[in-house]
Picture 1 (cartoon, helix red, strand yellow):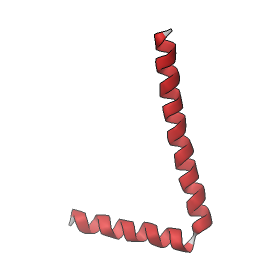
Picture 2 (tube, helix red, strand yellow):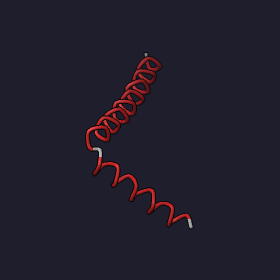
Picture 3 (cartoon, helix red, strand yellow):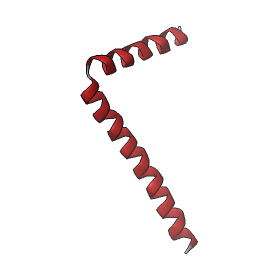
Picture 4 (spheres, rainbow, N blue to C red):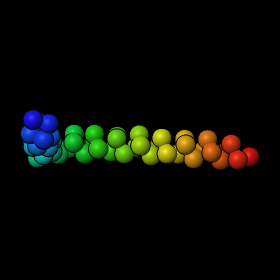
Amino acid sequence: MKKALGWILLALVIFYIGTNPGPAADTAQGLGDGIAEVFRNVGTFFSELAN
């Protein structure tokens, strides 16, 4: 059951990207920016910790 739900979710994501490429790209860019910010903050934390 869990595997089937994963395939259904993947199909829905592919469908969304295919029908709305602009908003999907904006969403992906936002997620990427958020992840980059987390890593930047972790790097700053350890840099400050070492000083």
